[in-house]
Image (tube, rainbow, N blue to C red; front, top):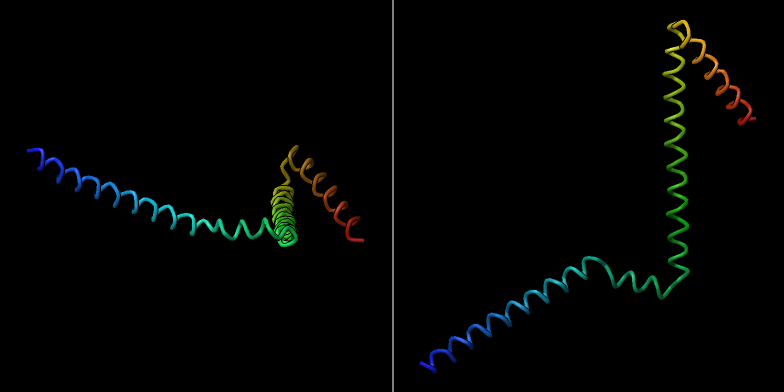
Length: 110
């Protein structure tokens, strides 16, 4: 009976080792996918990291500027349409806002 436990224990140990091996392999694949090696390379070359951050910041800034321009143009367009409806109080208020924004845009373009 003692002999049976030893054989059963050996199979269980082998299963545990296989499970640990599979888990380690899975972790290695996940680390490879996360590109941690590339990140470590970037840390070794600070100028490359700085250059990438400068490019990323520039792209973000341009994206924000373009997005705000479209947003502002849409708002002005909607306000002009609402102003053309000649709503009593709201129409005057919207017309004033449109005039102020148009003046500001004219000042900035010259």
